[in-house]
Length: 339
Image (tube, rainbow, N blue to C red; front, side, top):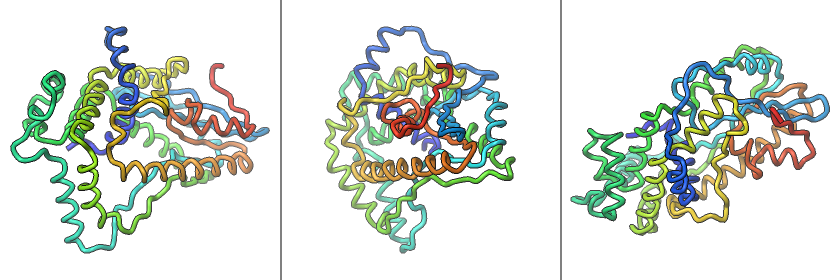
């Protein structure tokens, strides 16, 4: 199965790409040259500076993926962290991983989940996909998963998860875990720094109990035609990774003007919007809670500290709806590096 560390970023970026699928197809036609992922010693991104008088909040932006073979020149970031009084890690949401329930119930829910990942007995993707879409899938499979014989027996959503992990690895990309590990190491060197937790934990006592019903409801609410439309958009995403490569390259080289946020308009139709209704509701609640918690911590830090170091995703740094934009509306001074 796919590497779980890759999936959140892959699925998020694919959802954005799916919402703008026509744009991806146009990019394929107008940019025939393949984007090559950079490697070697690279400076990484510039830092955003948010100020309140002489109090400064430095924001380190992270992308969904980085060049896998880059070596980060981190001296400036190390120095800023060494002088900071507080550290705000990237906000995340986590679901409960342990519940006080009968292990038999948990095992049954897990079996139901595993069952939901497979097509009905005897069916393969060739039976449910239009011939042209199946041919596009086959071309990707032959290139990235040539020895995986079982992937065609999975539901389209899980085919994408398997395939996307293989594609990202083969294209020399990686999640930013190595960067986060380095930041944690720099923070630990500063004995005086406070670490403020900005994450949100989703509490749901019935989480495991509801899983079986959740899987059944989601499958019933997901017509096969909608599954296929979503799968087609995701295949388009995997066929052209140039936007994701461009983002990773620009981030690694510190080229602000080339940093695409890879954001989609709220008004654009997302062919994958029908997927995981239960999960989307939980995610929306978590995102709202995380934004409020991070903004509260950031404003408190700008009042209390001479220098604070924070980490945010590119969306929250670059988007007009992001957290940096919200700080700007609150009359904090936001300085964009190089401008």
